[in-house]
Length: 360
Ligand SMILES: [Zn+2]
Ligand SMILES: [Zn+2]
Image 1 (spheres, rainbow, N blue to C red):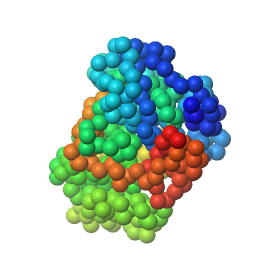
Image 2 (spheres, rainbow, N blue to C red):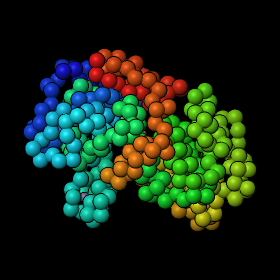
Image 3 (cartoon, helix red, strand yellow):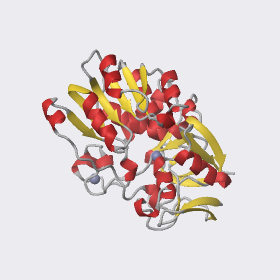
Image 4 (cartoon, helix red, strand yellow):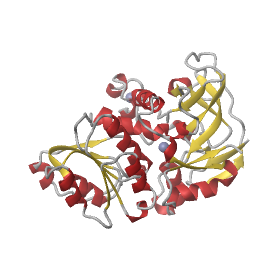
């Protein structure tokens, strides 16, 4: 089969690769053979491809088929599989290998396993991913899609699960709290919808000039009380105005640039909660943090990474009930043979939320 292969040096090529089969991988006999419908192009996929040589994250140890934002149909199951059956439409979690024995794994927080760093041992970097027609996935990391969730929409389930983890499991956002989201990409739009579903009001989302054509209007259509183009408007003033001068209860920095971290701290109210969330796929950002506002406002700073089974379960159920809309965020689908155009759109398109590839 054709597979879009990610090489250890970070480059991709559409190559002939062997079809995966049950019983071969590390999760056999709990492995499931899936016919891929779509695989989203994540920022983490593009990052290795688009940015200059010197700033690439380490690629996989050996050449593997890339892609992890997978939806598809189960075609065969290993002998120990009971959770899914052939014909089920499924979405797959990113599987980050974990030890199962440490204090966090024992508490179900396998995303912060003490013994396996979060960026290491991702299954699509060891077993191969879903930029191909066939992929195997461990059954414990699959979720059956309810009828009301399409395979197209399911491409967005992974960032939705991450947003559930960020907003509900980490920040514990509640009804009536004011929430600001800095950065209007797909992740920002999902955070916005989840905040609204939880009853958070008012909500603000900010972006820059390149977001003005599609992303900020999208946020408006999804219910943001205020959208701010920070290249044209004063974010601090807008935040003050929207919150009656007190600042936001919760601010999610989702842009991954130093100025956004500073703004997040600035627009949080005294006693507020600030999530440092953007820039994770690039290894974070380094900033000289002025600690005074954190001290005098008694801010609580949060981090978050990935998601857990519970985050996925919540994401799938909320999508099924229409509490979060995923379809508007899938901007374009390309056949695998046109992967370069897809990656280019995902990397630099200012009209793009999510781009997906499908097998030819
Ligand atoms: Zn992703
Ligand atoms: Zn562990």
